[in-house]
Image (cartoon, rainbow, N blue to C red):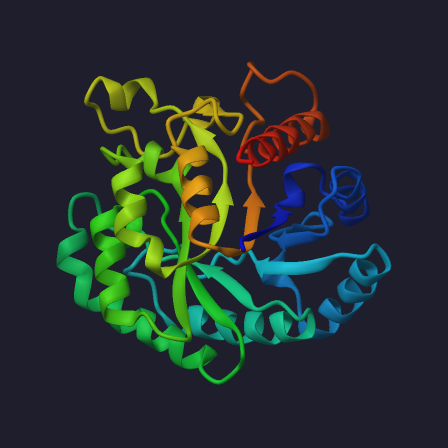
Length: 285
């Protein structure tokens, strides 16, 4: 029996946490992935400040599905020590908030040179894992543009080398679309055994990708769409999850700020995205 738990990034609704929680509660969500809180990155919070957040969240009836940290969203040539310190603090924050997961990335690569940095990526990821080991908090790698793990093949490589009780995957179908992964369903089939958490958004390939030009991730936010209206095969993935008895979080990250196809302000766009996701789930039967 599958169980989809709805979560999301409230900072795409508003800066203020109370407004984030109000809109999410109105849409039937009871969990939040913390990234931007009251105008600050969660990466800047201390464990003491997290205790105050926890009181606010508990009063609103919310749990924390994951810490949406920027760990590893840095150039591979930058020193590792600050990332280790950030990971330690985020583990402590996650423990205070009873969050089982911390999102992280596998470092920005010099263009066209990802394979040359493979060994360094693995060394760094193992060091990050060592910080979290034994904490009860799992690190989840998200596929993201321009990092080592931006392709399905390199995500497979990370899992072969690193997968265990401390390290698994977030699957973001839209990000695979954005980087030009040829077949998102094929990526899903390669990675699904290691996916414990999903980011839910959808998009179409940017025009430059369609024309064979690499424009990176900048300037493509207008190619995001309501879930089901893009090329991310989200419905097929949810059907597969349901058939396989998946129990876990679907974290809504619409990225619709610059999408003129969805009218309204930020809260209205987020509500539209929530309705599209709930409608898709209901349609699965």
